[in-house]
Length: 87
Image (tube, rainbow, N blue to C red; front, side, top):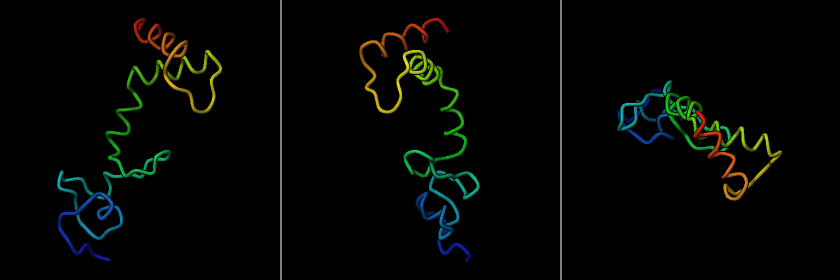
């Protein structure tokens, strides 16, 4: 099915009913997020994985043996800050 609109929302572009988003993203630039289900740009998702704070929190969770949902406070926050400031 050919796009009926030139510009549309991210969902419209991903489903093929629009050619591109207002920001100029095309279908090949978008993907559905695995956890949240949101439609995000591939380049933005890739750059977020390299974020040093996200890596520090992940390492702190692993060291403290935390699995599942946990608020970022107390010992987890302290350990994440220590790791982040060392880098």
